[in-house]
Image 1 (cartoon, rainbow, N blue to C red):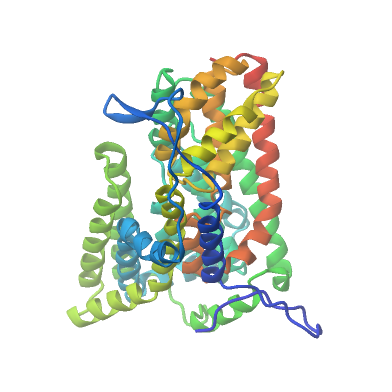
Image 2: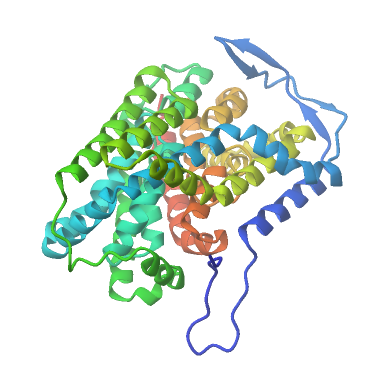
Length: 474
């Protein structure tokens, strides 16, 4: 299997060779290791409030730094593998379960049915992207859909290719949908709920304005994807993954000439799959399920689907192993991404960087202060991608700081949320690089494609922070 890369336009004499994602992540690891020799160590004291360890914003003090040398640099990916074991195990199990699902040919039949309907129905042509992006965005905005979107990449990439789009479109529907919903959430307990609890405001208060933000952010994402998908359908060579898509279409042809519809067995397999997704949502929302429970659910789903799909035990096991094997590269990418945070944490420089950013918030105008908070949260999001973890780290400082600079605590929380809109682009996010590795898209290729949309998100975030400052949003 060749590694996808950016390909030169026909007729060009020289092709620009870009570094592999592994190389880029290791360069970032090396830069962070070098920074640990320059940035002094620092620490905030913490105290327990309602079962959560919160930072005392007045307690920062310098401590001896622990510079990370060559040995620590080399060990960081191994430590990252250990600390990211849950998400790595989740990816491997889900990959195996989906390989069993694909072996039943039910997904292939569904894709062909949708492709046929898409070709004959103008309504489906126009509604497919808006409906699915909205569904994933609702998941991110309500129950914090994040890692749960990873399995859907394996469905939407072949679907997008079958409909004449590209791999980028297939990845964007579930991934960008869930991420924009998470960043612009109105009822997400993992970022809004925790941040409001820490800031001392009623949990899920202010949801009306957040709902407006979510609608606009999701609408912008849908409009951008529909515009892009229409361009690619008209001229596939405009796609940054054009060469990769040619390879994938050879690997997974979806001709409709001999397709006679979905069989009853295929419908039963797909029904079990949909039921598993419904159980996942119910478990996450009602019973606080996390990655291990969801992985166990997909493991059971894979076995049941294999039996219903009339696969024998050997076929089920071999398909599962092959599916997990295909995602080993994804697992290694996730480990490397986690290693970047481990180096900064072990050197005790994360709190120092946070402390150094705090004075930058102060401004004569509340709007400018809110914009600076957004900028700081964006920087912090490069290192800490957990919504709850970032809230626990920053809101004990941002909440009282907002009182001093004339920004309401609701606005400070919104600035924290919107800072997470950079997650789909940053190479230190295990979810981002994991999704890209799964789709075989080099990070640089994806980043170049994301730049216009990321600039739109940034402008949208700045605009959405203005009304709360003007109306003193409580």
